[in-house]
Length: 364
Image 1 (cartoon, rainbow, N blue to C red):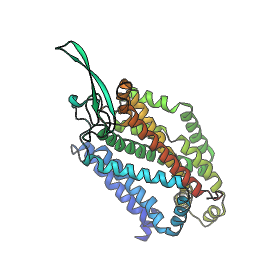
Image 2 (image 1 turned 90 degrees about the vertical axis):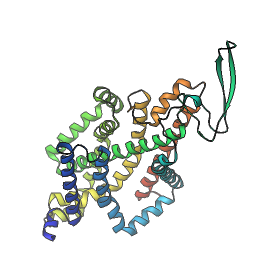
Image 3 (image 1 turned 135 degrees about the vertical axis):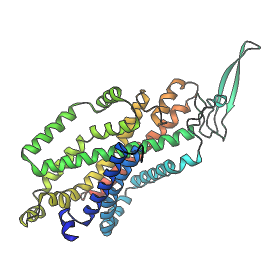
Image 4 (image 1 turned 120 degrees about the vertical axis):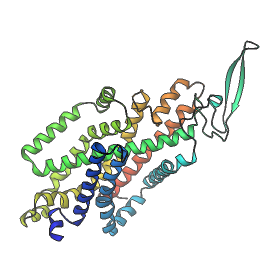
């Protein structure tokens, strides 16, 4: 067992490889034999959940003293703690909210354009009997505490659905981009030579295309399903990560502990996975935290211009619906806008706090 585990870089890597092999077999069965075993999102979770547990949570547990040290430094950044609290609130809303709210797609034209609780709005209705416009004042009700849209759909339910969709897209697309950028950056810097030149020139070519315009073009040509949008954002958003990871790895590969590992006969695979990648993880965590809000905004922008997935209720889709009635039902566009603003701000606050905690020159 030890000998076999050593070939794969340790027992942890062996277990992870076995899990990935089982997942691959299930995926092939799902693709060619059985009609449907898991949804596409489930395969994503089944791949990244063991990856995060084995190479994210487990190292934090093993190095509890170091984890506690960085957490104490992060807590000194008050805005980062506030941002983390709001993100935890969003996760709770995304998980529990669908069980406590109405169906966000349920249409009720009798209760359309209801204002939030505490507000009122005036609506003009044409009376066929008198052939005059009758203006009525509508008050918000607790049945729809955040109001309704022009189709009578409950905005609270739509915001809860948008929270779940935004967090899914932000997390999944960022993990894909970080995974690709990490591998390309580390391999490019460590191997050097023609490998470095080829990978960096390809990265330069990818960076010459404006990210959002490239995203719009691909989605417009090949479809706007939620799963496809996540893949496109992940497969086109890794260039910045690769650049930063390569820069950090270039400084690490000449350090004494790397040279000592080489002199002791360590393989390139062991040096990459045991020494280089763990030592750039602090940078990767900061990049991931600061990348999530950009991904959420990209999806919201796609939905706002009509290129999002019409089968799901996202914040961008609600904004798109609210732009047509800003003068009569302002809350339809304002409420998802506030949620987007607070979410982006929370992730940026948390990213700044984590960056300062990992920076030994910081005075926090």
